[in-house]
Each structure stands twice: as C-alpha cells, then as structure tokens.
Image (cartoon, rainbow, N blue to C red):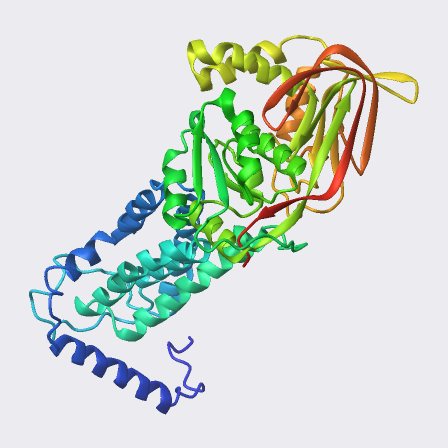
Amino acid sequence: MSPDVDLTVPKPGRHALRDRLLRLDSRLFEVAAERNWPFAEPVLPRLSRSANHGVLWFATAAAVAASRTPRARRAAVRGLASLTLASLTINTLGKRSVRRPRPLLDPVPVARQLKRQPITTSFPSGHAASAAAFAAGVALESPGWGAVVAPVAFSVAMSRVYTGVHFPSDVLSGAALGAGAAFAVRALVPTRAQTGPPPRPRAKAPALPDGEGLVVVANRASGSADRVRALHDELPGAELVECEPDEVKAELEKAALRARVLGVCGGDGTVNAAAATALRHGLPLAVLPGGTLNHFAYDLSVEDGRGLARAVREGAAVRVDVGRFSSGDRQGIFLNTLSLGVYPELVRERERWAGRIGSWPAEVLAAVRVLRTDRHPLKVEVRGETHPLWLLFVGNCHYRRMGLAPGRRTDLADGQLDVRVVHGGRHPALRLLSAALAGPLTRSPAHAEARVSRLSLTGVAPGTPLAYDGEVVDVTGGMTVEKLPEALTVYRPLP
C-alpha cells in the first residue's frame, strides 16, 4: 500500500515576489472596478462580446480588404494569420499551463458584467491576445491601417478588465503573446517591405515639391481615374492627361516634349510604352499602377498615389534594367517578361473570345483550346539541332519563384536575363501543367533555366507569336534578346 501523498517531498515555500505581484494585480483590478469609466458602459461590454470567436476581427479584415488596395488586402490576411497563431497558442498551451481562476465579480457593477460568463481559466486573456495579434499583424504590413485598427484592439483588451472577466496581468500577458505571434508570422512570411527590391542604385532625379513639371498620361481603359485623382490631390502642380488606348503612344510623345518627369498610369502595356518614350527622351519615369497585375510598379514598391507622390516630392529614384529584343525589322523593350510558345497563343485566343463571353470565361476557353492540341507551339535551333518547346520565358532580372505565374523580383538591376524553358515531348499539355503545378517549376524535369545577359535564337518559324509586357506581336527567323543595364531612371519611395 502506497500513501496518497509523499510526505518526503517538502511543501513548496512561499514566493514573496510572486505573492506581492498577485496582490498588486488584484488591487489594480479592484481599482478598475470601482472607477467610473465615462462613456464606457454602452460600448465596452458590446465590444467585448463582438470579439468572441474572432467575429469582430474577421469583419474588420473584410472591411480593410474592401478598400481594394494590394497593401490593405495583404494587411488583412496577415492580421488573420497572426490571430490564428495566437489563438492556437492560447488554447493549446496558455490556458493549460496556468490554471488561474477568474476574478470575483463582487466589486464589478452589475451593468458592466457580461450576460454569459466565460468558463475557461483566466490566464492569459485570449481576447487580448487576438486583438494584439490582429492589430500588430495589420500594422507590420500597413502602418496606416494599423493606426486605424489599434484603438479598437486596445478597447477590446481593456474591456476584459472593465467587464470583470480578467485581471490586468492576464490582459498584458495576452497582448504580449499576441504581438509575439504577429512577429512570428512575419519571420515565416516576410512583409513586402522586407522582401522588396533594394533601393539601389540611387539615381539623380528632379524633386518636384508640388508636382510641377510632372506630366502623367493615364489610359482611360484601365479604369484608373480614382488613382489619378488621388495623385493629383497629392501633387496639385502635376499635369494629367487622360486618353483612349489607341492615343496613349501619341500622348506620351507630346508629354515628353514639355515634361521634366514623364508619368504614366495604366497596365503593363501602357507602362511599357511610357518606358520606351522615357528612354528615347532621356526622362525619368514615374509609374502609378493602374492595371490588373501591375508587376513593374509593385516590384518597385509603388502601390498607390501617396507613395509615388512622396518619391516625386523627395526626388527619390533608382536606376533599373531594361530588356530589349530584336527580330528582323521588329524591335522592342520589356520591363517584366518576354515569352514564346504556349503563353502568347493563350493570350491571342483569350482576346478573340473576351469581347463575346467575358474575361474569365475567355481565359478558361483559351486554356482548353490551346492545351488540348497535341503539337508544339515553338521550335528553335540550338547548336544546329531543332528542339520542340512548349514555353520559352525570359524575365527582366531574376524571378525568385516560378509556378503558374512568375514570382517577385528582389533586384531590378542585377544585369541578368532569367531564361526558363519547358521542353517538348510526348503529351506536351500534360508536361506543361505538371511543370507549372510542381511549383516551383525548378522541381520538374521538363524545366530548364539559365541566367545570361544575352540570348540568341535561330530557326523561329514565320508568324510565331511573341508576348512581352502584355502585348503580342509576330516574329520570324532569328531573334536576339539582351539587357540594357541600369538604363531607365524611375521614382520609387525609399524606406
């Protein structure tokens, strides 16, 4: 027979510091209960209930994302990811590690008390952890939205003491854990500010305090009127020119003759035309994203008119590489990507149907029609031998991840062309999809890559479509692709 209690183990002694902190915690709780909080009674209990199960934060994330800016959407996602990590930590470790009872409600006025009292242990506060995690996650991605969310998060945390369900130390510990969760998420998934291209090489560009000397040409078809107006509010001295797609090139040429800085707002094709004009006239370029994907602007960390306006006012600019191709009498530049093979055919097929059935149905139909054909859309000669290819991709600078779509660039002046190939063979459509879904493409045996400063192709069939920065043209015979290192000066907000 063994005793229920081991009398040989000494009883734990008193911990003077711990007991003193607990007494202080209880006293602070009583002071908060006795204190009159102006205007808090109709607000804080409701706010506390609304945060149950994260409902308040999911609604807030939806409201932030509804602003339709890329940074706001990323901030909402990061906030929810931080909240999820904090909640998992609280429920699996926090509540089970310290089984502290809830405060006694005797000193708390009945009007403040929640109708349904929580039954879990008191330490730490899950509501405070979720509030701090969401607010910190949002702020790490977007300080502006973080400043909007922070007062709400603070109020939710304070409501837990106000309604009598937590001691102050529970709230402080929960808030610290929530903030830690947000930083842990950032360590796993860096923010765009952390992974953005380095602000170099710096370039000399005019500083225009009110925008005078900046002429911005905006493509009306891109639906960017709101962004253009926002930029004009920031730079009232700038001149804005809105035009139809077929007028863009002509208006850019006119603007270049009277501008100190050439500005553009539109999709990748419009930005490409502006870059070509800026190169010819030796002007710096200010890019306001106004299209669907906006690869170049986002890789420059330019996401809205406010950031671009700050760069123009400060004269903050960098030099970036430009890609150039030539085939026969046709020449052109590209800021993002150039491709031969299946992708240009997809683009052309999509454009054929988009006006009849809409953009997304046209995307699906184009993919089905192109991928079901058992032929290779591209053949090139390498060392005198003809090789079938399904895709030849050339990126202006190194793309860090390649899957169904190109990833991001962290350096826009690395002097390299990022060349990727999906080889032909039996069942080409299946091989292409397998290569794309392998994510990244480098895991697929059908994929090959190289980084060079110049690329020469021969044996390209007449009429082969080539896509570059959203545009599609025909090329034939030989083709050369090369880099123009640090050829273009562009404004970008510096950290």
